[in-house]
Image (tube, rainbow, N blue to C red; front, side):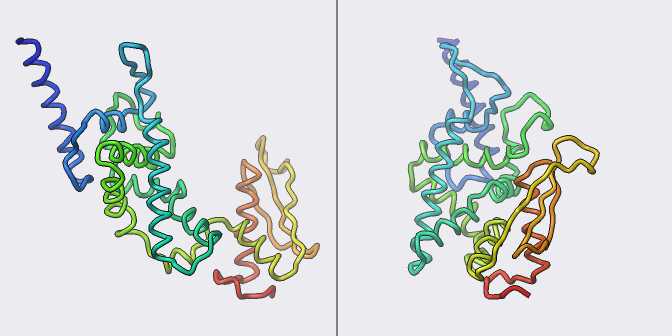
Length: 249
């Protein structure tokens, strides 16, 4: 009996500490604290249960990602009644992209909540966004869809989403410049080659051409990033406005 009293007393104290940490982030009091403990447990801790199953936030991260997409899809569907499926998909991608989720996690100082015994430099660059997704997954299981939706509106939609500004934001310059070239009936080409003059291995140089005329270039350690840099430079070189109405100059 003394053991049970000690056990429940310890768990109550741990839950109180976690509740205090979550108080500034959550708009409600958690019911199942074990879900939030799991959401804030990184795989690097290498924790397992009695059966040897790994305990970390990866499954909750997967679930939270799906819940966020669903809430944002519903929000856009209601707020943009005249938008077509393609437009809605583009807008959703701008909202739930990794960079934006990382910014949200950073603004919430979510890494301060990690159940950790390791240095921050051991974490990946997307840790803040991953934790945000895992937290949403925990909320969904604890409070249901309405609870998760309430949290997403409080932490993401209400303070940060401006549809008018977002509509003008370019999430991928490469996709944008290709669409612009096609609308203006221009031939385009991204030519990639190993950047032997850079002095480093596995660097790429990408030249962007319009109608066989070189417009811009980009350099990076990955071909995809080099293409994006070249496209962004072309966007500004050609003075293309974000509404897509400008023609080639």
